[in-house]
Image (cartoon, rainbow, N blue to C red; front, side, top):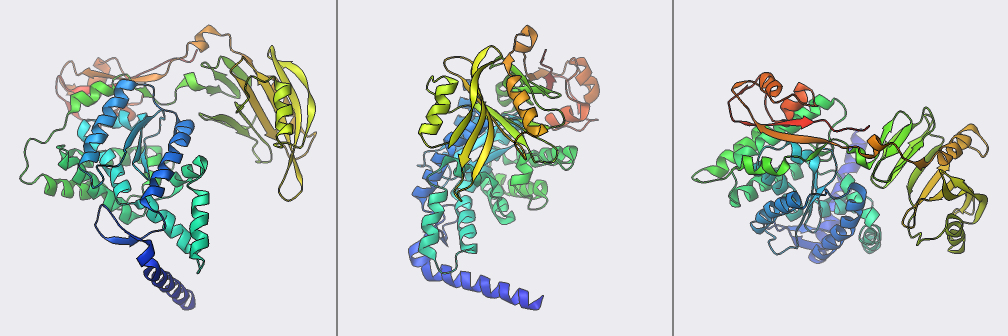
Amino acid sequence: MLRTAMRRLRTAAALGALAAFVCVAGCAVNPATGRREFTLVSADQEVAIGKDGYAATLAEYGRYDDTRLSAYVDSVGQRLAKVSELPGLDWHFTVLDDPTVNAFAMPGGYIYITRGILAHLQSEAQLAGVMGHEIGHVTARHSAKQITQQQLAGLGLGLAGAFSQTFRQYSGAAQQALGLLMLKYSRDDETQADALGIRYATAAGYDPREIPNTYAMLKRISEQAGSRLPIYMSTHPDPGDREARTGALAAQAVAGKSGLIVRSKPFLEHVRGIVYGDDPRQGYFEGTHYFHPQLALEMTFPAGWKMQNGKQAVSAQNAAATAGMQFSLAQSANGLSPADYVAALKRDGRIGEARGNTETVGGWPAWVGRLVIPQPDGSTKVLIAGFVRQDAQKLYELLGQSAAPGDRDEADVFAAIRSLRALGDAPRLAAAPDRVRVAAAPSAGTFPSVIAKLGGSALSLTETSILNSLAEDASVPQGQWIKTVEAGRKR
């Protein structure tokens, strides 16, 4: 144990000495602190990482389709950015079409906030606190710090080689840029971002005393979800009693100041009608049956498999994780027929061999068979494949793999491919999501009685109380604006 500890100390000392040795060439001033810090990531490279990640993030999560709300969020973000240490940076504030309660930042001024967290906030000042925190991660260069630390951990003395490899990995590929979202900030970074968020919100004229309640809300969601932490809590480690600490920081920040703004009603007006939870128009499951109203199609996945619906693909896997399949839109199909698309894959060297035939799936032209994919080590991998042309714009790609050719799982994948067909059920085609309603309490009363007077909510009483940042037994005065959720429909 002692020998291990000493070895770790020597390693840390060596890394520290290495950092000090190269600091003349690799140090930069941290905008948020004014301190010189060793980094393998330049400011220009941060912008490039954020730019690469922008398109990938939109593809992965989708932009929320509400121009008025997006413009509002951007206006608040730009107001905060102007009082940060990087007012000249080209800041981007984007609302994602994602139900999770989350907000995150990418280097170079790219800030994302989900419709899920917007539904749970109560005021513009709270929104400013959340986005100010994310701006703090950018101005304090926390992502650059994480990348640098990861590279140093395996660096040895090959500094130049590691540096070039870092940016072959991150700067040139959008999908790799998405990997930055998996880098967890340290507790110290979170504490610093909390303080910076309060600093920016206050400097922009917002009342920071609204901010601590945001962390109380996140904690309640975490407790309600049990082990299924909301993404915000899993990617932003809690450095302690956030509510108490930010409360103390906010009290210090407002000392001697007056006229600070909260803007609860303007904020609630903007989130009125926002989609809540999963949007069935973008696909949903009923058992193993999958419906996608926007694409007007349906299909059946293998029984007993675990399914997941995503923006870019629908995936499924058997219980033993020995077989799986994925359904998505083919890329760069350029109007080709399914058979011609397979031929193009072979011509371009993306596959080695195709064994299958043209057929009709769901009334649409298709190619179904197996693809042989060459591997770097000289071996090959066999994929089950189906390509189905729905119309001139959409060619669907269905790929799968099983433990062995001809086994039951392979048969199940082929059956799933051939189950694809047009969705003709009018009620399902007209699926609608749950949405947030905002209304004034018609009379004073307890929270449950007010919810009942407002016509109820599609959420449980506990979930509705969290949505409003109120206790379940809170007293609600007449006229207070309350959020409930109106149920949509799937059929």
